Amino acid sequence: MIWYPYTQMKTMEDPILITDAHGVFLETPEGPMIDSISSWWAMDFGYRHPDITKAITDQAEKFSHVMLGGLTHEPALKLAEKLKGWLPGDLNHCFFSDSGSVAVEVALKMALQYHLNRGTEGRTGVLALEHSYHGDTFQAMKAGDDPDYHFVLEAFGPDPDFIHIPAEEDALEEAFERYHGRLSCFIAEPLLQGAGGMRMYDISFLEKARRLCDRYDVLLIFDEVACGFGRTGNRFVSDLVLPDILVLGKALTGGHIGHAVTVARDGVFQAFYSDDPDKALMHGPTFMGNPLACSAALKAIEIFDRDDYMSKIRRIEEITRREMAGFSDPRIREIRIMGACVCLEVYDEKTLDGFPAFARERGVFNRPFLNYLYAMVPYIITEEQLTQVLTVMKDWFSKER
Ligand SMILES: *Cc1c(COP(=O)(O)O)cnc(C)c1O
Image (cartoon, rainbow, N blue to C red):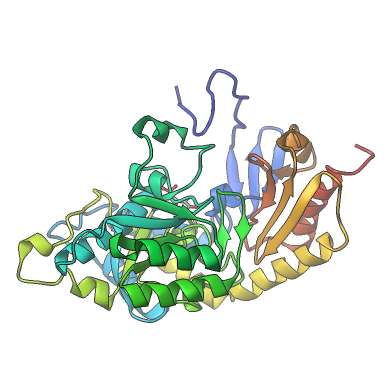
């Protein structure tokens, strides 16, 4: 039997059987529903996108997998070359992984070894944000700050190498003054913190982080696994503030196959590039650079530009702001909108009990967590479908219910 994620198996409700998926729709035996959360924020281009599906099947007819140990292949070469030109600055060196969590582990390992390779000692610390989420593997859990999810870490007791601060400039300055000599990196989900509650903060915080990282020789890591590919209304936040290491996942393949990438700037790569074998990056996920995933990613990037996805995202934000304007309820603490993400934070999580069934009866799939009712719709959604999603969210609070 399947052991399902993030759930108590004994009390969980039966999961919904999906029989087909296309565009914004998940098909169930009871009929279709709009997926308002894009399968954990990955399916930005919609399900079964014809061009991405074709890219995968075309590649599958050649070969579905070849390892990158001592071998290489065109889909991975092309994707690395494409990302080099497509990503900002000198983010030029692509290390592929099979999931976002692993790509975060790679970023943290890179940052640690970057300092070791340059002979700087004692740089084992990781500075991260409160309410951050970086994945479910162990160092990623530690970099995250998610006691509701990762309480298993309590078994180890506190780890002095992981320091969490609020996304506030004063706290940032203070942390750098106090800890800079032992920090390898500062890792953040830039502008939009996803699993920590769709929290949004200002770009000036990241500009300050960039300056402090430069001053103290600390690497800046952006985890854009959730917020990349336009979700914040910026193509990448890295277009605004350049990190030293960028992590991408989820929407990288248009959500069609799990894959991720850790992209390093020239200066990071140079610290590993040596005649000394001990300076090599010792990592290698079996399925890194999988040809099906790389073909999907190449096509997704092509479509993102070709079909001007940034304008679709701007339209989603406009409609969302229009539909939410003037809406409030005493049970709602705050309504947050950024790009193609909207979150209604309620005071009491019980307020959201029963919402998934309510939404489903109205043709929408949604899955709130804790105090957060949110939507991260596929970018291909029509105005009518988006209005339907937002209306269902608002109607949950209406008196007639
Ligand atoms: C989902 C997520 C990850 C982990 O990605 P997986 O592919 O689930 O391992 C890491 N960072 C952020 C910000 C995420 O949202």
